Image (cartoon, rainbow, N blue to C red; front, side, top):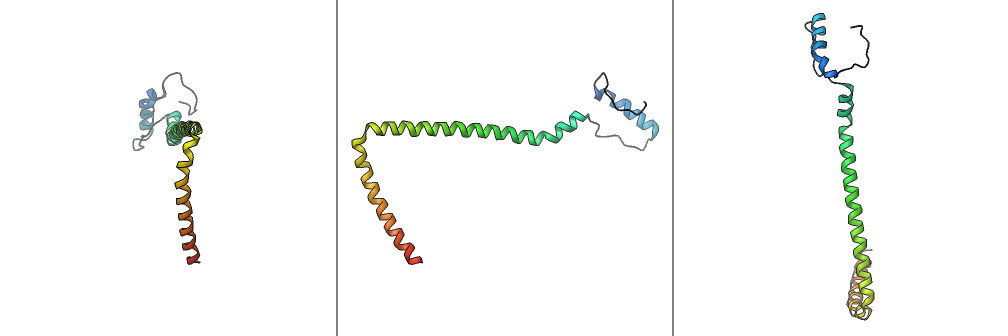
Length: 114
């Protein structure tokens, strides 16, 4: 071995035992552990980011689907209620009265707080 780093024609993990033998012949006390290829090191370092981005993509896709369903529901409801305009007066009247009561009582409490 001339000490250079370069590409080899076979799997790099196949040379681990040969490299351990060379290291042991030089210094028997030198430990050799955690031998990995550079591709393995890179994959391990970006695995957390990769999982995070995959989850982000899945949840954003789910959000788009839910938003589409919601918009469809609003449009379907509004087109249905447009056909039943005569009923809408009966539906809105109690709501307006209730809103006036809530605002009047809430406004009085707010003025007392000042």
